[in-house]
Length: 327
Ligand SMILES: [Zn+2]
Image 1 (tube, protein in one colour):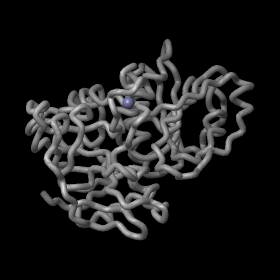
Image 2 (tube, helix red, strand yellow; image 1 turned 120 degrees about the vertical axis):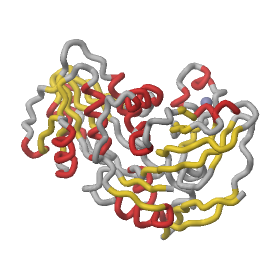
Image 3 (cartoon, helix red, strand yellow; image 1 turned 45 degrees about the horizontal axis):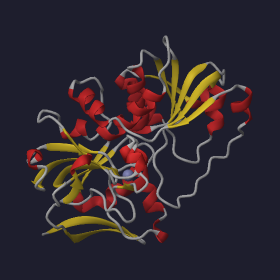
Image 4 (cartoon, helix red, strand yellow; image 1 turned 30 degrees about the vertical axis):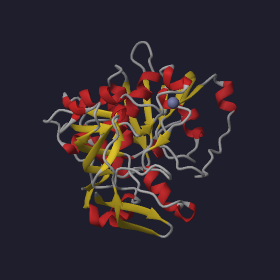
């Protein structure tokens, strides 16, 4: 069958028809209802010259419309999904580290078409069912919240730690709420006014970046800024023997934005530097279903599928917290 799909190719974002085969026995066919645009999508668009044409998108809420023979129970379920397509067979998959699968592919990247399509097939093992009562506007935050929860899991600390979330957008605001569940005193530090306003509205403590002293007094600094940001700022905020956790957005292949960082403070203050990439999707869905995370006002613009190009243009505006496309 033929469905409409967004294609990202050199110089254009277009809507094309794409063919979809029946799902294999370990797959489901999904019809997304809401898709969000993340930093990876924008970065892919900005370096589109060398990109092979592909369908972007990895954060969605959808419904299973058809199933392979081994996943019939998922039929008509509303779902969210992990963005990592993994083999399930390699030593890392078998050893419980499928996030680091040796044959890992990322949904919505060159060579692995994403969810900005009216219908597509997905491995059953990616699927996380959600309750009928969880609205799309909440469920769309499951994937970024799941990544924040993984970072929180890396951050396990005794007592009531002081945590700074450094960065902007809905990612920073979700991460701050995830971190607050650790019995932590959490603040968002940002140079983005829209992020600070939203933090105020959501009851998340916040400070403008330029007003924050570099006091080396935070137990943890969670850095959610885009690649190429400086770790130096985080290093000046974290206490000796504290942790910096990098919860950076994923980058498209070949996207070259190295951090230019003086690593001496890390040595002199014995700072632990951790990267976080994985996700705790089931946990994130449960928290959203229980109403434990406030996402009110985090969707700042919405577009229809036929206006995908406009949505991508809007998502580049740093004052947008989250741009979504209704399918
Ligand atoms: Zn594998």
